[in-house]
Image (tube, rainbow, N blue to C red):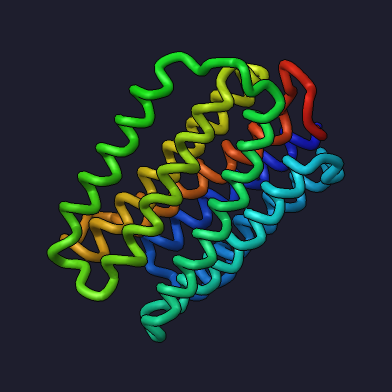
Length: 230
């Protein structure tokens, strides 16, 4: 019941956010964007009571995502807020990585099939995107490189949960990680390389889907072998 209710609320927020992006309604954007993480935080708390380390780490990551969302809203007036927002999302991904690592530790002897192939695919995608952007990054080369590495590790660790949790949770969080990569890829190309039509709506749509799937996957998570605190 809680999942249906919060999914409906999040869907309404999704529609409002995309409308505000398309209409360039700054007042509505300022109202709606901070609510993305807040709705997810409340949903996660009510469904899990933050009983385990996994839930606590995803919850903490969402708090930093909320901070990042707020900082990035004001980057046009204060460009250095982009760096602060980037740092907030780096911390968010680090907490997600720490959460996903718990699932690996629950059954470390389980070998994830095609793991090295997936690592290679993620590495090629992110390094290729970075080298495409590099000539236009200027002083932002190091921060963007560090962010690319962190989010790539996050996606790899999401894939590494295969066989260690129920398949529904695995798929939701993996798809969430992929949508996160897509969202940040669109943002980076639009900001540093070339304008993308309807970039604001594309970035926010993929970002909201990513966070929703990660939280849903967290709520539905069940360990196959329980060797760590749930």
